[in-house]
Length: 135
Image 1 (cartoon, rainbow, N blue to C red):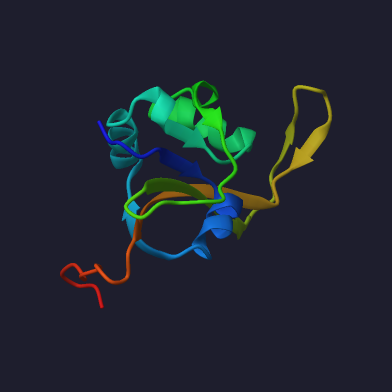
Image 2: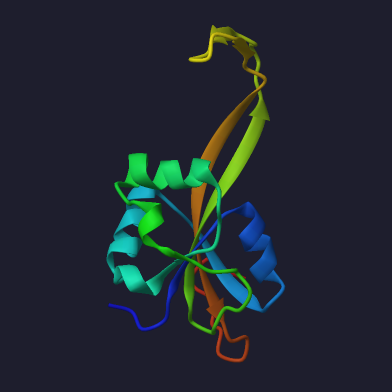
C-alpha cells in the first residue's frame, strides 16, 4: 500500500496540475490502471473529475465504482505522488448513422470518443534520472 494519495484525473484536471512541476508520464492499459488502483486503499484515492462518462468507464471497464472515491480539486501534487489520467481522444465520425433514442427522438453520430490512460508521477528535477529510452 502506498503512502500518498493516488489522483484520478481527466483532461481538465490533468491540465490543472501540469503547471505545478515536472512529471514522468507513461502510456498504460486499462488493466495496468486497474492494477495500480488496486495497490491503494479506497480512502487514499482521490477523484479529481466529475465526468459521468469517465465514472461509467471506471465502473464498466475496470470494475471500479468511482463514486466510492472522495472528490478533490486537482491543485497540489506532491513529489513522488502518482496519478492516473483518463484522457479523451475525439475524432470526427466518418459515417453519420442515426439511431432512435430511448426518448423516441433521432440522434446522429457526429464523432467518435475514445479514452486512454496515462500514469503520472511528479518528480523532483534535482533527483530525476531518465529511464532507458527517455531523454
